[in-house]
Length: 371
Image (tube, rainbow, N blue to C red; front, side, top):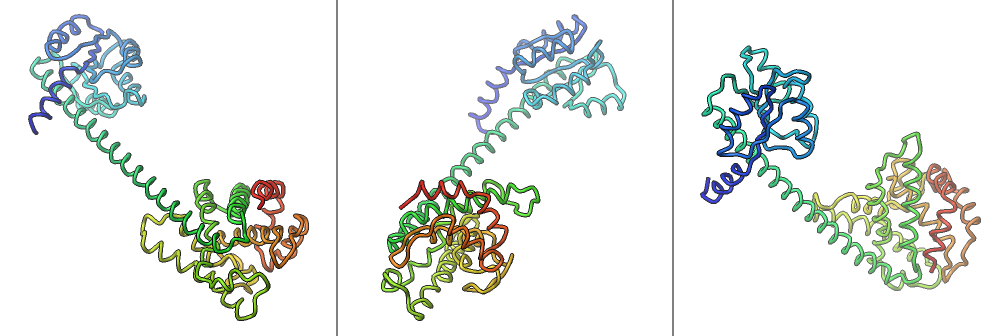
């Protein structure tokens, strides 16, 4: 141990408060004489008084008589160990009892050590010093662990900030190249959040998503068309309908987006988190259909990831109610009817049920983020 640490511990020990609890005044007086040269001493003539003192300000260590009226030392110890404010205060039992069973009862109650009556002052000081040093070491370790935890949390927040900033740039690039979509990205993000929350709140427990997971899923929704960055401008920005060959190229954006996000996941490793995992599922599979007739992998039913099934409904709903150079916008009711007609073929019936249950919320989102 270096000199600086020794000085710190010696100073801490000198400032330590020791509470002595005994129903015999003579014992209190004698113990105070032993301890006062080195410590601040508090005295209590009963277990109840000791608990009252500890509630006001927990001491650094307690020397506790076992045989006391009303509340014996074991019961006082149990109550102190049950209270988070005093749980870590070391307790040394002071007793004339010498049976092993008595010591076992003391340790079971949470005691740290025993001093037997009549006591030796040298033994008392040695035991007190040892347990105060152990508590100081434990306090240092807890403080160090708290610092590490804080540093890890700060690093986690920084990783999330960098991740979200990167996401913003990536999505912004895709949106910039497809200006006709307006606020489509923001709307679909909120649609997905609303649908996921409704499904997770249902009593059947079929969808097990925490609020944190739903938040990550919603953050991932804007990545659904990230693969469009790989589509040539002549196709992506074409004002009219696409030819068969152009449509075949356009459809590759799902695979392109999934592959792009998989590379990001591989690069980040454990720091990738749920958001990028959801993003990959959404980007690759939001054009799959419930009956297996979608693309790029022809998945069907629940083989399609839930995140992608949610995105499919949110994406189509928004596309239907939004005007495009090649089509007029549908009314909300018309869009709802269209999606109902596709329930069980194009769309997951349960997600369609969620859409119907969230009608007012979906209209509010569409209005708030109107182009």
